Image (tube, rainbow, N blue to C red):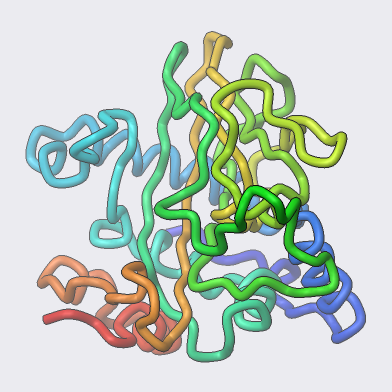
Length: 267
């Protein structure tokens, strides 16, 4: 097990945290640099490959709809569970969703060349639709969130051919589903989120987004941490399933991790 790097585990002060949260609500996403070390990212990539390639675990970790998505890696490796409370990101999530926020899912997207969720979309359903004659939600309003995603590139995604996440900034205020091609909201089109391994970005699942196709010769690894509000409003708030494998991973670890992961767990 690779130890956490102490310098990366301290919450921001109130001023810096507020600035990042404001940016998240305004643009629909925000980037935080250098949260995980390269050694940690290397380790999580290797463990992802182990889980995907091992005939014993392959059938349980492969997403039923996307063969390149590895689900619930936290049931097999503690570092994937510890990642949920990693600062300085966890305090940002708590400020956005509330202090009772909890686990809503985890996966690693392992895009080999040519693979991607490349169509423009929002996740789940359109939560705040508007009629055709209302152009957008008022920018002075912070639209409430029931859940959000935190993405951790485990490999460098620094060029278009690496398959970056693309977003249309501000489009979560549109009150509409994403156009299928060339989405533009108030003059802003698609923008790639370029990151090095260990950077993190939080994004609103109602923003128009996609994964640009990976046209490089390298595999793209992206850890997804999903958090929900604590009040069960959304389907994402049902909590993790309490399995023997997960109990084994959490046993003897940081009790704060176990408390977070098992909050409102399903038995």
